[in-house]
Length: 136
Image (cartoon, rainbow, N blue to C red; front, side):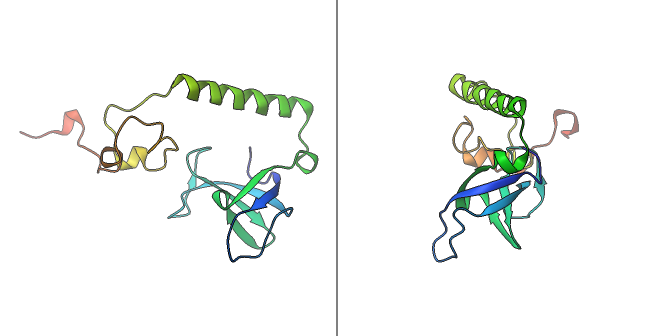
């Protein structure tokens, strides 16, 4: 998924807001929810633009719009293979976990609090000093 790709809102789950179900949207990318800073793919929250409004990906069910996105059959096959590989990795728990978790490393990780074996206290602690910088 690349920023600028057309999407469609399948179901708007926000309460008390205008319903955007069925609306055309544009995928803006992945962002940190609190700061709005861009994040790498999958390490932040997807943000969509519907007209002039921004909508966070967890506020609705959405998908890429293959007709408007110009996805070829090869693109769709690559997306499907990537999803299958990610699901297989999750089933097999093939995730590299840091031996020194800390907020700077773990704060935006999508596995924190679910797939990660470290506790919330460990993943949100300040960065520990590196081995070479310890003083006696």
